[in-house]
Length: 404
Image (cartoon, rainbow, N blue to C red; front, top):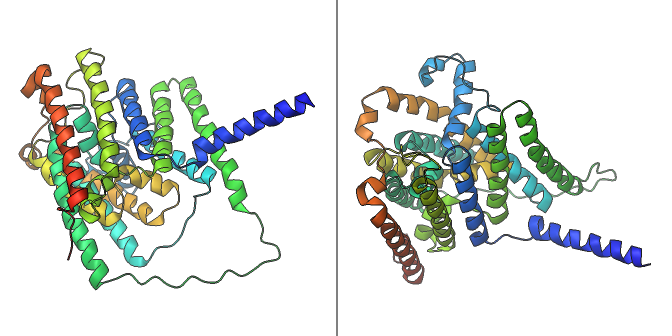
């Protein structure tokens, strides 16, 4: 009797822990802390967190196998996606989000109106252009750039805000003048033999995905590819945190102008405080070179790139990272945004690299070279405080909320 009671109690605790981790909604601030810590670990593991070069690898594969490698500046076959570190991390994010959404019962694919697919592709293409100009997407060119003390991150932040304003104005105009016609839902016909109930199978598939990705670290290590395996592992948990909390950097710039909501802003500020503090220790302690990751084009490239990227992400309904976890949970519109990004990014990146446009857009600038380690922390504290107070002011007054 005692043995049975003990077993039932253990099983009850396991279920409670499973529900807490995989079923219960994760607060944004928890995800912000988790992502900040993961960003530090990724920096220590290889280099600062980024997304766009993984998209570029997928696009390069497409150009190469279609015989258009010269357009992307390819002189030889690119690394296969499962050997490219950032590509592997991006795949890990997709699968991590797929596993998380399946375990919570949120995985679902559906067809969007045709116009939304066009907007997804065009938005993705704009994000690809913006990333090539700034030398980083919203994750690498803004979040990571600020976190590793690259001046380009602050300029891209301004550009993202300006591009988001234009995007929000377009969405409001579209809603008022050209609304999407959603077809009525078709009645579900009852079937005597419905077949497999996938809603009951998905949690097991999701669990299997997590086990497989954790094992992939050891598989990569067996082939002397430990670094690549680690990137897959990190991608898995980045996808988990983002999907479970609906963490989306796009909302940081869209929502203040659309609704005034600043919950996402608070989470990003918290995450960046953790990331920049860890980055300061890493750089000041010479665990990584001080200028590691300082390659964002200041100031013109980051500003223009941010404007173009900001417009694209609002139209697409996702940024580079949220596009990965939304694709992982079955959002078909975002699949087209990824295709648009991968198609355009390699070509425009090569154009920037090989023409006079590159020098015109600028080069990386290290904030510490300007302010020294004495004043850089002071500047960052002032920056985060001013950003937070501005977001609070906007929510209370709706001063910057766009209306027609």
